[in-house]
Every structure is written in structure tokens, then in C-alpha cells.
Image 1 (tube, rainbow, N blue to C red):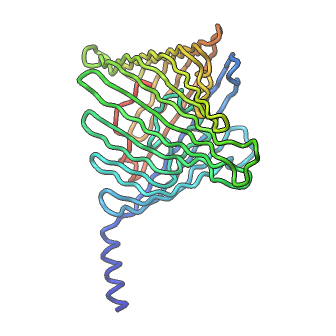
Image 2: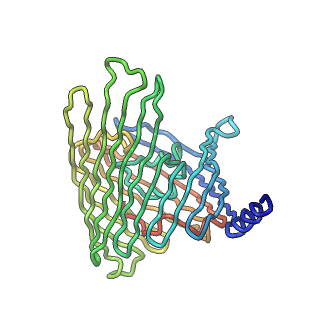
Image 3: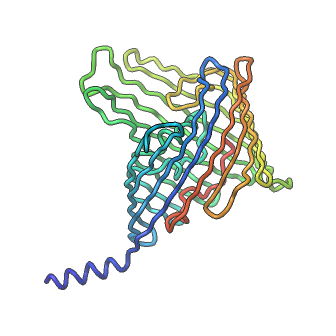
Length: 337
């Protein structure tokens, strides 16, 4: 009997393969802000993510690893360590992740109004699930990120959301929406209330890439509708505003402009500039390094807000190698945002 069981395990193990992946993400972000809603500061550091896993079959895998953060200037060997353990399914149209996994695998280009870009530095992971359907002209994702477990002193919090795009010839529709649930602690005080906070980001646009000698040129208009509710008074606050966006790219160079006008939004996870009634961001960037598994980009951003101009300089270097590195979860083209 033991011999039969051993032979069965041996035959099963031959159909499975071990794999690995290593990602290095280096960042430098200097923010010379002059705004009542922002803090001038500089971030520099590296995120190092080694993973190993078992390829169950051609579609499914179990992976385990960790992301370590080292901030330049720190006297710590590692400033933060974030464990990763997740199941992945990667088919021709459907993709599914469950567990603790890297934010970069699913949110490479989320709108800053909903997710502040410093989250990629200091919360570079998602704890929950992410499901995606990717068709020829339609893509839709649904996700859950459990951001805090309830204790006697810590509130339970989580984010539920979805994002996607669809194309009708050269026209496109992009959307991203989520709800952030801010619950009570296990022993709530009388002044402690449940709060809900969320938003819808919607953009309709036209892709001019095929009509001009550029790598990409997109123009979009849309808006942001957010909501805020505290369950002590059950009053809904629903600010909204207008968006105009332009993106152009050619041979590694790119420019992007986002203009917002409307009411200010109090989104817990979003860029504080969108708390203002009017805001314009202009980016110019260059990607001088783009090799197999290696990409480096330098960008300069100007933020026009409150009759002042703020400056920002960013550089990132991403290295991604390994047997798992070929199976990307986001094969869609970059969003205009």
C-alpha cells in the first residue's frame, strides 16, 4: 500500500513544475509641493520581491514570497517586510488571484484620484482577491482588498471595487469604482461610527493612434462622482466634477495632462489634490531603458492648484525576471489615466 501511494505522489509531482520570479522596483520621488492639501517630501528606496511557486497545471499555480522595502537614508536593514502567499489562475480570457499578492500585478496604472501613487511604495500589496475577464474589445475586473482586521483597538476596513474598459472602434470607455468600508473596533466607544467612502471614475474618449504617426494618442472626457456617509447621521455627501485628459506617446517620450473642475473629494486613498475644486496636472516623461524584463522611466510633473505651481520629479526602475515573469496578469494597453 505504501508503495502504491508513493508511486501516485511521484506521478503527480512529475506533472507539476516549480517556478520562480524576482522583481526589483527602485523609486525616487521628489515632491516640491506648494499647496494647502499636500506635504512637500521626498521618497527614495527599493522594493525587492522574490517568489517561488508550484505550477499545478498549465493554468494554475501556488506562489509564496515576500516584498521587502528599504528606504534610502534609513538605518534599518529592511524597513518593512510584506509576506505574499496566493493562488493564481491565468487562462486565455479569465485571470484570478486569491491571497496576498503584489499591487503591481493588477494595478499598474490606476487613476491617482482614487489611488495615490505613494501606495505603490508603502502599501505595495493587496490582501484579498482579483478577478479579470479580458475579451477582444472588453475587459472587466472585480476585486476585494482587506486592509485591516478588527481588534479591540483597530477598526475593520476593506475595499470592494471594479475597473475595466471597452472599445467601440476608435472610441473607448474606461471606468473604475470602489467602496471603502470603515467599520468599528471590537469594543467601540459611543462616538465610534461606521463610515463608507467611495467613488466612480468614468472616462469616454477617442483613440487617434491609427490616424497619426505616434505610438499612442488618446483624448478623453468624463468625471468623478464620490460619496461619503457616516452612519451616525446617515447623510450622504456626493461631490462630483468634470475631467479632461490627453495622452500622447512616441518612441519612449510621453506627455499626459489631466484637468479637473468641480467639487472637492474626501477620498481616503486618493491624491489630496482632488480635494480642491480645480486642479491641473501636466506630465512629461521619457523611458530610456526598455529591455526584456527591464524598464526605467524618468518623469517631470507640474501641478497647477490654488494659483500656484508645484513641481515633482520621479524616476523608477523595474526589473522582472524568472519563469513566472512571462505570465503577466494585465495584458491590456495602458489607460489614458
